[in-house]
Length: 141
Image 1 (spheres, rainbow, N blue to C red):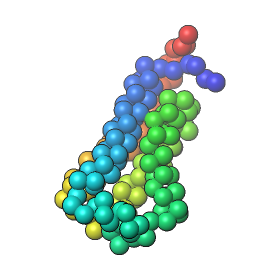
Image 2: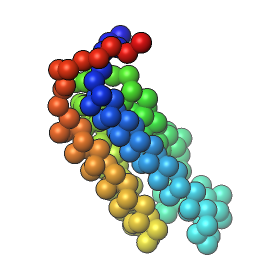
Image 3: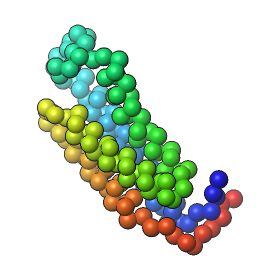
Image 4: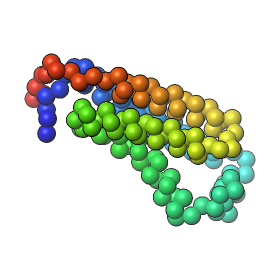
């Protein structure tokens, strides 16, 4: 494992991880916020939410979507520069698409959470896209 990093590298990794933590919590709070919507619990108990039948496949897709930020939080700390940059760009784009795709008929609170998630994801994309490999290395003990 490469233990030679620069301060710029460490700073970018910390910023990217922090943004992914923000995205993760925003997703969780958006989902928890739904429990306060009148009729949501009754709707969820029927197995149909927002007109969509909740199946094992739907639950798996939801689990995969929520696992992306959790995985990237860790990977940002451990991947090499090139793999890190690529992972943040690819997953950032995929998360923007999934955020838009899962909010086809949103209410105001979902729009609010989607906007702040997408803003954070756009910042992730900007940081990752502009991240240049630093050639000044320092050894980590």
